Length: 136
Image (cartoon, rainbow, N blue to C red; front, side):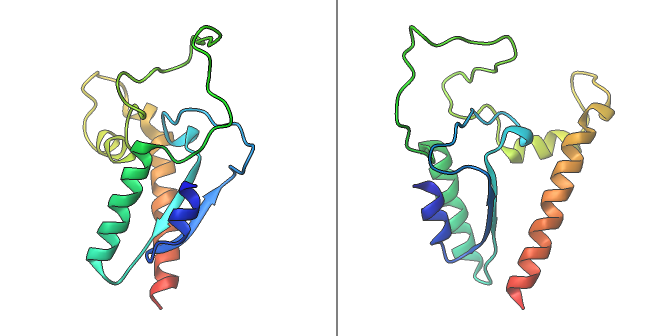
């Protein structure tokens, strides 16, 4: 249902996703586990901000309808699973980009952030190209 609402927004340009009805989706914890990329552009800044605020609200409320709930007694956590505490998402894209741009407080090498920076750059380039085409 969330994707249909996004496609109807006046700022909608494109939606890149591999998720369809019946797809298995996992909790998004980083750029590599994201279920899609939404591109918004609008000459009216207020409308663009309103559409973006609605997308952020949908992200918090949930974008998908599930056929079945996970029975907590049968749920098995894996060693590589990140469990959010009191939140649906562990981190927003905005925070990832800010962390990648600034110094790393844990002393990690900035080379570890290279894949994130490349993905963010590629997403930005795609957004710029699509927005430029829409504004013509």
